[in-house]
Structures are given as C-alpha cells and as structure tokens.
Amino acid sequence: MPGIKIGPYEVRFYEYDLNERPHVHVRREGKQAKFWLTPIELFQNRGYADHELSKIEQLLRKNRQRLLTLWDEEMKKR
Image (cartoon, rainbow, N blue to C red; front, side, top):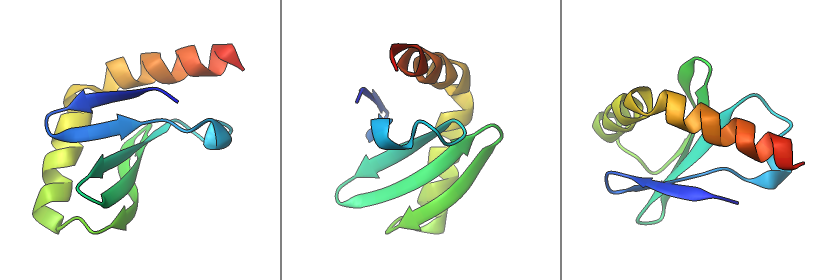
C-alpha cells in the first residue's frame, strides 16, 4: 500500500483495513501508531512517547486533506 514521508515519519495505509474509517499508520524506528483521520485521534500506540505523539498529531493535522485524498484514491482502486 502507498506510503508517504511526513517529516521523519513513514505514513502508510494498509489494504486489509480499508474497510475501517479513514486512518493512517505512522512508523519510525520500530515504533508505530494508528491515528483516525476523521477526526484526528490516536487509536493505538506502540512505543511513542506522549510528546512525540503530539508532534505526529500536529503533522497529521497539517496534512489531513492530502491524507484523506490518498485514502479516497485507494478506496476507488478496490
């Protein structure tokens, strides 16, 4: 599935969970978090400290429309 870089983070969608509401998986150095995009909200965290989650959330807010567009493009491919 497609992935993009936002700052130091790899932001990905996975085909197996496109039936869920729009969300992204954010990875860096063995850590991963899952954020809903509507609204931006942390769902799951594996390894990120709170201050880094806040930074990720800010980046996702700035890039939200781009991410939702990518999500929609992936849904159309199904």
